[in-house]
Image (cartoon, rainbow, N blue to C red; front, side, top):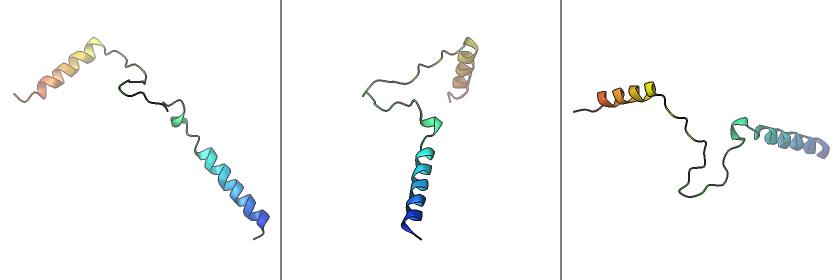
Length: 64
């Protein structure tokens, strides 16, 4: 194989690895962390029904 073909193969592999690294799940993620501080999105509040369901579950799991 000539050196031009090797260079082309390497360039294609390199470009492919760059494109594969651009995963949508990786976008807009936190890259700098602050110790002791939560930097994520705020939690959505639970509805009254959801809170009641959780209370019932906790009661069932109480193990008295």
